[in-house]
Image 1 (cartoon, helix red, strand yellow):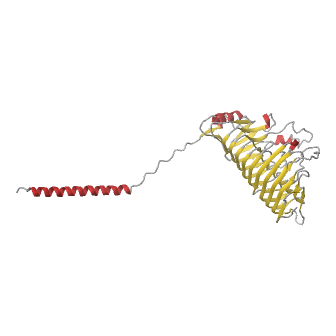
Image 2 (image 1 turned 90 degrees about the horizontal axis):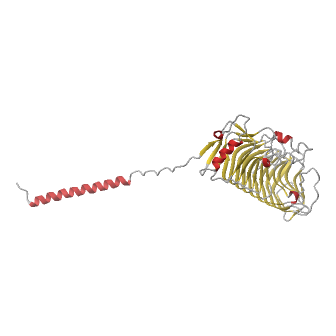
Image 3 (image 1 turned 180 degrees about the vertical axis):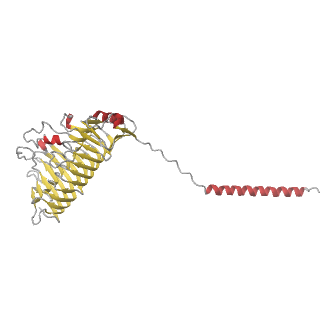
Length: 422
């Protein structure tokens, strides 16, 4: 039987409706899958690895006799002249002797010096230009780290010091500073041992934006002039979490320094933490905004000290010593504006560096001397605004008493819950 026109039309409509229904279902199903599909993780960013320059590749030899100064300098020159930041590596477990090195900038990029082994001076006196053993100058964006050692091997220099050989002129054979940073910016020095410097261990001079942390600084108690960390004409510096045991100041802060933050220092033996000396040879000196917090002194000559010469001028202001523990310290708190470190007697002078706005807060412990607090200010330029707050010092020997000696204090000198007191 022939299909009628109506039947043909009906069949066509049924087929069309099935197609449309299948297509719609497929679209819905496809949309459902897309909505719940896993998102692709973004690509991992590429981090460039710094090139490592092993000093041995440049000729350094850990043979106990070679002077490796030139090899170190060649590695430095390559890193300094590179447009990409590089790491200079001093390998672990080896000792590299050097006479003296000058690492100079400016450099094209930042530099890292990773000291895993030991850099050591020779055990004899020799000519060192400008009395500097290892010097970094005019460098920005530098870090020095690695857990290794810088050893000044300074015994021969100490024996020939005028402070040991009294008949010898002090300028005849002046010992070099072990590690000097001059005119450096954005500098980090951390996790290193600094041993037996010929004279000062570390000197930050004319620097800005510095952090020195986790340093171990050691030299014998009788070694002369072996300051741990010396700060001069330097601003915005932090000295943190370090142990310093030497024959002189653990930390010394002198002319031109400001915004100095010293925290959590273990000191002793040594001469304590000193502001100064200032004003020597009638000079004009300034220090400001010095904050020392969390120090422990054991068996030191001084604790926290400010020392100035007669005849000088300028200002030492805004100085805070806070949260400090003294253990058998000879002069726990001292201001000495009659400082004199010469063989002959110093003349009495009318001018002096002004000392003002000094706070001693939360200081406790024991004094090895009867005078636990000695504020010996200038008669002509008295100290201004000195505050003792929660200072509790007692005698190291049971049964002994301690006292405070306070001379020439002007304006608002307060003793708040402190013993002894002015």
